[in-house]
Length: 178
Image (cartoon, rainbow, N blue to C red):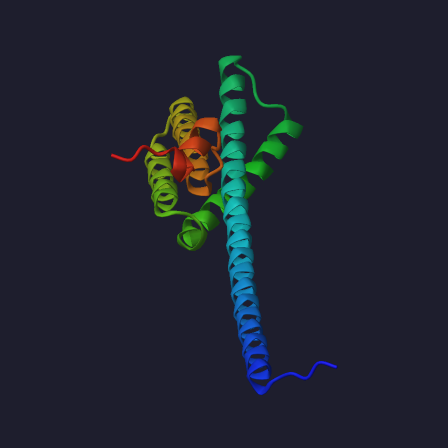
């Protein structure tokens, strides 16, 4: 029969204690990091949704101007059913753009916020004309530029433009040390 010496019991208790402390600290750290990542992912999803709604609103706004410009070039009116649909989507788009301008500082990057505010300002300037054709053309150009800019800003802000070159650049072991 094996009888443990007091020194061995002390060593065994110390090892057990150290193991428990390491396990508890590791568990707490793991939970903390997992929760932080979860919050970051949820925030990313909300930001992506905000960009998506804004870009879609700009698209619908542009569709309104495109349809009216095409009809004007053909010396025709937009059909009534299409006009009603365009009006409804354009009104919703306008509300979404206004909403984005008001709350963009919370979810969108500062560059996006500045771009939305510039779009609103440019739109007000374009609305000062009394000529329908000029108005349509200006608003379409302003909207198209903002749409393209917002797509670029969103890709950069959300880091979705991930190709092989960008992946290699992001890996630190591929960077040359000087």
